[in-house]
Length: 99
Image 1 (cartoon, rainbow, N blue to C red):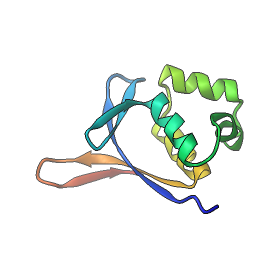
Image 2: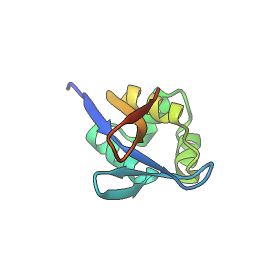
Image 3: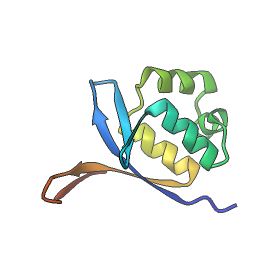
């Protein structure tokens, strides 16, 4: 099965360790988004953790604590066959992309 999704997201930073992902007009917590990503990529969160060379327990705790970094999210995208994009969009349409 070819899994190639593009995940377009906006990230709202709530604090140094907490953020939520906004898809369109829908705001979801990161743990909810990770569950959806697992379902769409046909992988369990445990399998995603294994592909990241992390224990499922440590990975789930990191998700629950909201301590995933941009690098973590990029790595998760890679192992699930997605493309992760992150950046800032100004009201005039200008963009700053975080790579």
